[in-house]
Image (cartoon, rainbow, N blue to C red; front, side):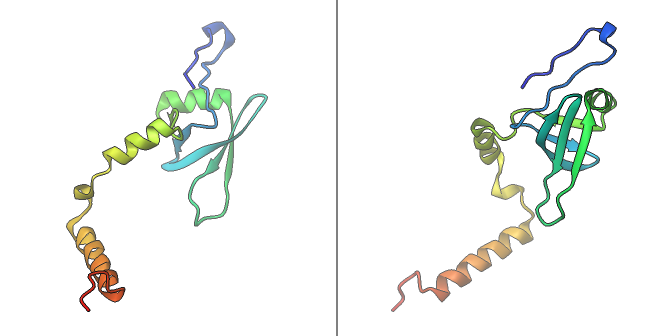
Length: 119
């Protein structure tokens, strides 16, 4: 979804948020939930927390985007962007202790299930 601007006479700028978009708002990640006549409802993404919804009118969305409180990540949930995110993720970007622990865990599991067929 692209950003569309209304004229100054209409009193505000409108930013579209759709089902494939993700937002960064209040330092947390939010997904599109539904749209209503004057705005949009965002759903908090974290799975280990209770479901939380944030209704925002389009005027609020425009104001928060302009002052930098709300960032809209357009087409975040599309296949193309998922592939790009996967290609950008590098194991060497992880801290060395995380890489070591992952390697130790995989070696333990391999030995436990005798993947190496040592007899």
